[in-house]
Length: 390
Ligand code: APR
Ligand code: PHB
Image (cartoon, rainbow, N blue to C red):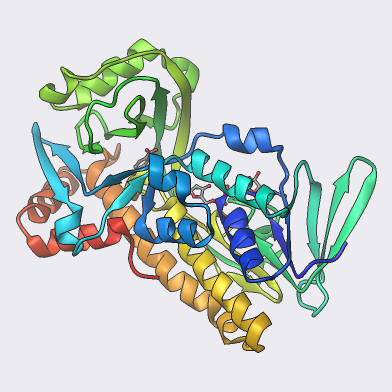
């Protein structure tokens, strides 16, 4: 087979890039290791920065998001028994975020790819990029006993944190930066009315908690748990009881509980791989960097990669201008690191660290006190949360 851009990974990054390139007449093939059902069965985060929402519209996939997604102009930080609101709209100069499940967004991207007869190959086994430093790279995968070869101009590694793309960059070229937090988030999805119309991030000495939502009938809640905990240790009853303990009484009293329809533990990790280009391989999204979920930056760091890559590819194919491709890694990483900084800051401010000393706790409290005493500090939070410009 032959294409212009071979994209490894059919998550939001790979699908979005495929869709945007298609609209500019650039051919792509997407190779996804899992089945479509499996990809669409994964429960992921649900806050989109306005820049990602704009990309969805540009990719002609924004209709359902605009109909069913909720615009959120602010969120709450609960701490020390009080509830302080961050007015995103006011402090970001009129911007906001869209609450729309990443699973739904992925479904919309798949439907758009189908509509435009895009090639997305599922259950592609043993995907392997080759000849990345040459002008003729290719990718192979296995379909049963048959090995299929795809010749292309460029390979995009959009295959997430555990993918094969990043691993195909030689160790002496790639530098990895990683920070693993000593806790995870236990998340529960329930078909219940959300406790609050806006998200509540709660700092509590027993550990962080988050009240989020997917719609007015679907709630998503999280609590910080030690890394040694297993999902099986947590009955629904135990989860709700612990969540209530960490919320202000006025919220806990209103919480509507119900059976969990999904329950999982995700470890918290920050990770960046540099550079994001190796020859004709370009990394994008989780393949190159991940953040702890506290600042809702996961998908949003992927958004700028896709934006830069898409424009760089179009300039290359339409005008023979490769400046964007040459500058991609540097440009993408500059924004990636800002999302890393923001996610680290939100995580550090709101969680309980097992090894923290009294001094650290005083600083955490002061961070919050400063935040809500300074319009400039709120402005900084707001501009990062709604998404820094691409
Ligand atoms: N070959 C082919 N596909 C692969 C391979 C492989 N060797 N390894 C992984 N994949 C697929 C995964 O099955 C997954 O569907 O690549 C896809 C990567 O998707 P994501 O992990 O969702 O990563 P990305 O598309 O970059 O999405 C950005 O935003 O909210 C965050 O972390 C969250 O996934 C989210 C991310
Ligand atoms: C979610 O709804 O899953 C969610 C929302 C905000 C976050 C993280 C996760 O910061």
